[in-house]
Image 1 (tube, rainbow, N blue to C red):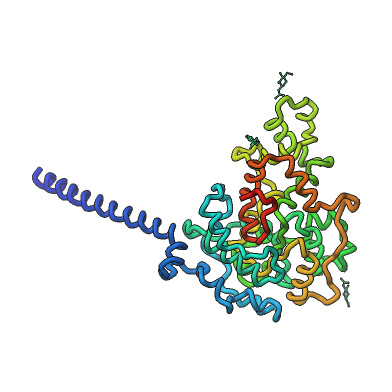
Image 2: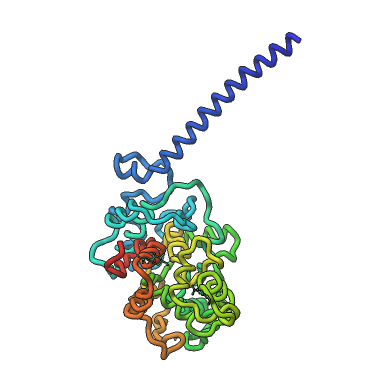
Length: 392
Ligand SMILES: *[C@@H]1O[C@H](CO)[C@@H](O)[C@H](O)[C@H]1NC(C)=O
Ligand SMILES: *[C@@H]1O[C@H](CO)[C@@H](O)[C@H](O)[C@H]1NC(C)=O
Ligand SMILES: *[C@@H]1O[C@H](CO)[C@@H](O)[C@H](O)[C@H]1NC(C)=O
């Protein structure tokens, strides 16, 4: 009896101790989280040392001897002088559904280089690093996932990783990858569908984890982007304005039945005739009736640029020039140049900013602003100017 009482008293004491320990632990974790949350600010404001390696130090981008950006044109091996590429942190921009806040906009003003278009790699890569380092909330240690590299194509001979962005020259890039890898003799031999479906190319998510990590560490990583609104309009025209056996039944039907009042029976059945406005309503809906699609998914999510740390960012607006610069940089055969033939619908009117404006004029100011917010990270990371002056 005595013994038991004594025992339970001591258990009680121990419990109290345990509870206090728990409390302290929770307190500690809480303040650590708080600290980590504000880490980027702390680093900038008071020079607190980087607690969490390896992430890009905030100041790194300002240094002129910035590894990896400068020596690109010297020789291909110089590309490999990068610090370890696989960040243990997940991409904050992947699946980030938070609205753009005032703070974000203030950061845009600070980060975006004045003067709009930058032609060379250095400023592009520096801007991307700066944006990533400022936006990256520390959410915990996580390795890169297969999903995050599922759009990345592998070319082992020239040690190239290419992240596919639809409507930014990707069919021709797949042709180039096939020729580089010896799977085709020349680009003219590859019909559009073969290039498009890329059956002969391997994607990074198809490798064992060690193979993924090794390639991410040592290969030249490449991304080609395009003005986001233009890419969106082009995707809409391509998938919804001409007959399509996948996008009409799968996306069209869901979009019409959700967003069109009094839809006709035939529209509900075929899914044909989605308007740009309905499409945008779908895009902005947090409870979309059908999922995302790579043709309109922001590049900041499609290619995880903050996580994968690309060495080369090409732009569709200077596609051939950028692509050939890259091909020479990786030591591709001198007679291999980026194809300049257009893929399909050669008669189709080229989607220009004029057409983009026309489509966006179907939206009201609020809707336009929301679409801009949706692609905001792409505008920010790749330094595209605001497409309309009334956006903020
Ligand atoms: C480049 O030249 C080599 C031999 O000089 C030839 O075998 C190859 O097919 C050519 N490639 C292209 C893309 O024309
Ligand atoms: C739908 O049709 C009904 C009956 O024809 C009509 O009363 C209603 O106003 C229509 N609604 C819309 C949103 O067009
Ligand atoms: C714009 O359209 C949306 C519907 O998509 C509507 O809710 C909103 O009130 C409109 N805004 C303005 C400023 O007209």
